[in-house]
Figure 1 (cartoon, each protein chain N blue to C red):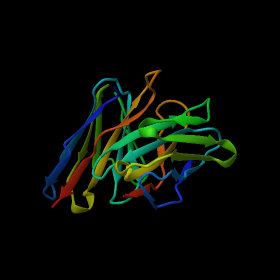
Figure 2 (cartoon, rainbow over the protein chains, first blue to last red; figure 1 turned 180 degrees about the vertical axis):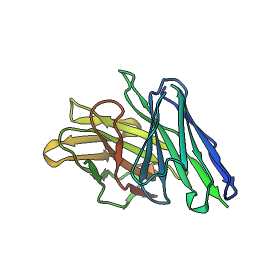
Figure 3 (cartoon, chains in turn cyan, orange; figure 1 turned 135 degrees about the vertical axis):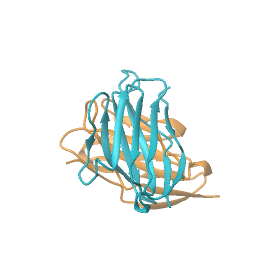
Figure 4 (spheres, rainbow over the protein chains, first blue to last red; figure 1 turned 30 degrees about the vertical axis):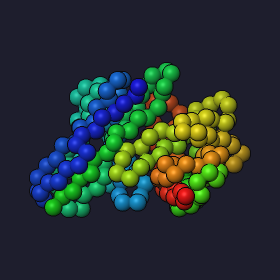
Length: 117
Length: 114
């Protein structure tokens, strides 16, 4: 149980275009999801907290107009990188909070490798 | 603010040897504590977690961790390492309660020699 599906796993896009990454909780409802960015050989940096039905909360220094987050249902959050540039190339990982009493915790997606050329 | 320190960036052990990965945290009370493992190009897999109760926590793949309040530590251990354990290991801390943000350590890369 507690599976999070993240798609796509890899994407290459041209500079100036937008890319959407999906994060789905498959067998539980996730009121809260989190989006992280990971640089090579580095730790995870929290970008934003996504709450179902409300606006996302962004961490300091993260451009909310560039990284659009939508959490329209209890099982789906999306991250759209708008007007992507090469410096946006990175590994993006989502996480969903599972509030089940027996298995409370945070389940991570398998990540998306974004390359902007 | 909460923080996590993983003092060992890189550790190499021989297959069959024991392993201990260190994790120290800074938080005003007892936080939620997690250990995750990440293989190259993959997401994070939960090894174990501590919320309260017994301070020795058993996880998957033969891992265990011990919460020591006096030392603000949550070290990960395994009595006998397998080659397949080679990966990046992250310790994380979160405030008790729902929707809390996790703060991750910088990670420890484990290399296993045959």
